[in-house]
Amino acid sequence: MLEGRSGIRPITTFDVSARRARQAAELSDFDPAAFVHPMKLRRMDEVGALSVATARLALESAGLPRTSEGHDDIGVVLGTSTCGVHSTGEFLDRLLELGPAGAPPMLFSNTVGNAAASLIALEEKLRGPNTTVSYKEASGLAALALATDLVRAGKAGALVTGGAEDIYDLYFEVHDWFGVLSHDGAFPEGARPFDRTRNGFVMGEGGFVAIIEERGRAEVRQAPVLAEVVGLGATSGLTALNAWPTEAAPLVRCMRAALEEGGVTPAQVGAVYAAANGSVDFDRLEAQAIAEVFGGRPVRTTSVKGAIGEGGMSGAASLVTAVLAAGRGVVAPTAGLTDPDPSCGSLGWVIATPQSLESPYVLVNSFASGGTNYCLLLHIN
Image 1: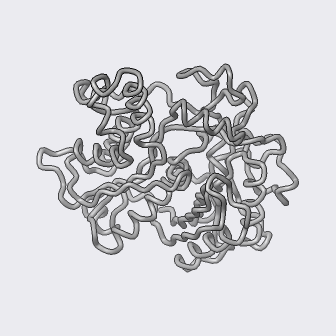
Image 2: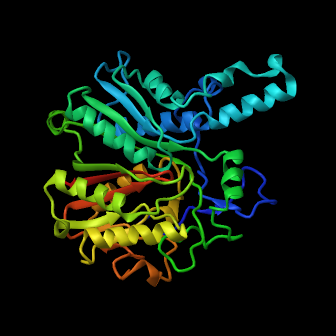
């Protein structure tokens, strides 16, 4: 991410020869058997195995390893927009082709949207609250916001939270039919957020998970405290179900709500991790909203989606990237940005190379098609 390299490549896992869009940010070199026993893997689909693996890495990083007893006060809040879709499609294909006797029963438990969160709890023996959030592209950051509220309210000691997503061929084809995907035939053009040549977003998959808990609890355990959520905003816009936001006002209100809850002025913010994904009108709208919130003051702005694509995990990916990059004192660049679009306003502040983070406050945006908006304001330790 810090090198500005993109994970977007020509699709290899299914046939796209008849499609306009032929690229995605596919997960590579992931071995689920390193995290889940092969016998159990037979009962998990791709996003379930990915979620379990990512959750285990996060728990180990936070000094919360697996125990035979498990944890009564640790739960799961997972954001995903495709969990269950892959298994549902495969189950229905077999049902229609072979009849009820040919439908594999092991697939059925994965056809529900909360399967991945439940698998995390089962594998790690987490008996706290278990919730799945599905707000399309805003799912991952919405899950982090809900987890923050639950910990603040004392409903859980700690929560495994973030987003996980996989790419399913039928889901990809539907988006291609809508004409919303970047349709360049070859890498390295990719998604190109804020770039003059952008022409749509690129689908991505992966898992991005953090542990949210009260600072005092983490410090007693001598866990590494990477950042604090100091403010959150949530709004919605009157947007068509499959359309990106068309009004700046809900985006502006969402960012301002996060800043106001954190008691932070726009001048104190060191970076914005934007929701921009390469969609022509949406990127321009978010740029205008950021300019309004910050009064035209240049603030270092970036998007992770030129590197990892768009999906229900992308808001969580923005937050995880923001925190880890800030730990090195920098803001990660926007992969694919070579020719900033002047129609997005004065874009000297959208960065294509790593830049120093000059304030501990970072704003993370996640705006979804259909009009769901979330923003989290972080204070980096």
